[in-house]
Amino acid sequence: MTQSSPESTPQSRTDERRAADPSAPGPQAHEVEANPKTAPDPASNAEKDPSDWVSGDEPMTGAQASYLKTLSEETGAEAYRSDLTKAEASLAIDELKDARQNKR
Image (tube, rainbow, N blue to C red; front, top):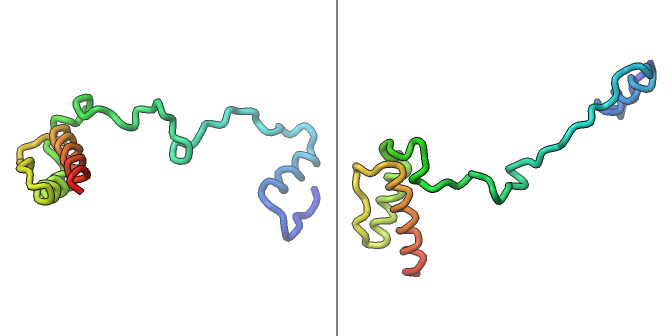
């Protein structure tokens, strides 16, 4: 086996080992899947209808409550209610965001 040069990389060391041992397994051929963070699939289920959420019947989160209260104050709507579910809060937030955008 040859000694690693100061500029060696993990890949170059692997290549050196493979060259020294021809019976060593070669690189595996496999499909490379797209990274959803950098190449999202437009048909993915990342955005679901709130009525389809498994946790949609749970009480709204603190973040939803805070944002809904702020949007209600900005738009003058009385949409904030402390008893909303996650799904209801999400729909109300979307409506108020649209109303706020149209108001500008």
